[in-house]
Length: 99
Picture (spheres, rainbow, N blue to C red):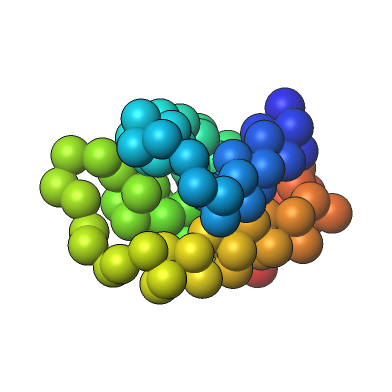
């Protein structure tokens, strides 16, 4: 489940590079926040404190309620960096004690 979620989140974030309607970006914020909260919970369950903290911070960054205005260019960079990190972390999913 976690691997699938990471792939879905990475795809959603990379699609943000395209010129999408504003509603898509709002949807990505909600889905990303929920996904990162779930991934933080699972990382914490696996005693992976580092990843749990990273996912909580990402959930706060992407949360849709108090938007963080970074500008489109900087958000594009953030989206790519987070997507690449999610894909790179696929091999660590579900292992206990990874830090």
